Image (cartoon, rainbow, N blue to C red):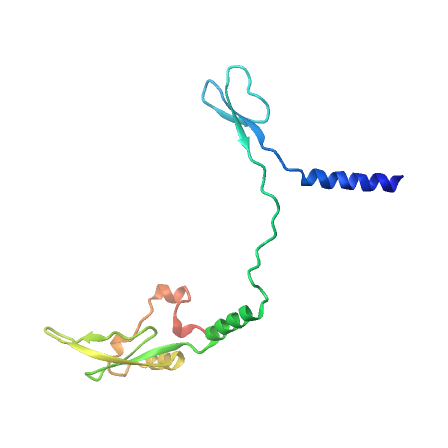
Length: 166
């Protein structure tokens, strides 16, 4: 008998949970001073009342499948991770006038010469390992060292100096 009651109670509970929920009403009350209140009971005397229907919460739905753990996704993720772990590159910039300078981003296509009436000079670039570019930038004896990429103290203090990253 107790088992039968338990089963019946479980069936009724499941049916109640599956029963479609209806909208609930809430009362919006504004008093003579303009104060606004929302409540589940009708407004008192002397208050303006407006009934607001609140829709029930949406039914449970399973989370979408984002492909986590699938082999093709894992290979794309590992390819991106290996690209991030690859040695960072910088650029050696060589101007037609003999200047050599280093940048962590691409080299400019041309540079302006020094002095009045100076003309633009073409620049070629080649990728070199970041560590090598940083070592060459540390020695300011090369021609064109004043054109080397510099990092402000602010950026360095924020840890954004490419030459100080490990």
